[in-house]
Amino acid sequence: RKEVEQDPGPFNVPEGATVAFNCTYSNSASQSFFWYRQDCRKEPKLLMSVYSSGNEDGRFTAQLNRASQYISLLIRDSKLSDSATYLCVVNTNTGNQFYFGTGTSLTVIP
Amino acid sequence: DGGITQSPKYLFRKEGQNVTLSCEQNLNHDAMYWYRQDPGQGLRLIYYSQIVNDFQKGDIAEGYSVSREKKESFPLTVTSAQKNPTAFYLCASAERGAKNIQYFGAGTRLSVL
Image (cartoon, rainbow over all chains, first blue to last red):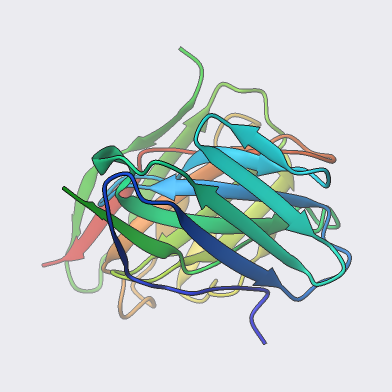
């Protein structure tokens, strides 16, 4: 079983739409959770960390459900510039290894 | 400017040749990582290092080697034993401890001639 699983998509949504991505993780001892954004042929960049209480940054909201072992990312009022691949990342802190999902592809259509 | 520098940006390898990818960071991070990404796929861990003079194999270490002689530097050698080296190679670093965040270099694209 993979450490982190994501729906690869693709998600094609119109501008202004709300879109949600989910990610599940297998290790209940996982401590740190993140969403990264990766543009085509570029390196991943941190979008936001995910905290137990949930957190929001502008149009982006991340939530963590430890009981069900999943993380979500909600994007409201989608912009064309949101088109990218979104990577779910989990760290167990033991050995300081990061586990990546395969990414979810989002295309925002005019 | 603080960050992670990878070089070269593009690299071509001839058959049977070893090549070395450079990764330097000035973030004072203890941990450094090498990943490989193939088209349309996720990141796969090659090697990682938690501290100077120590490193661990990741999921796909065969055909690769690393060294960690300095905190700032974590070079990756792609040896001739790696039969399918064409990929996008990403170096990252992170602080140790809870809530640590991983930062990436801009990557090196390796192709076989």
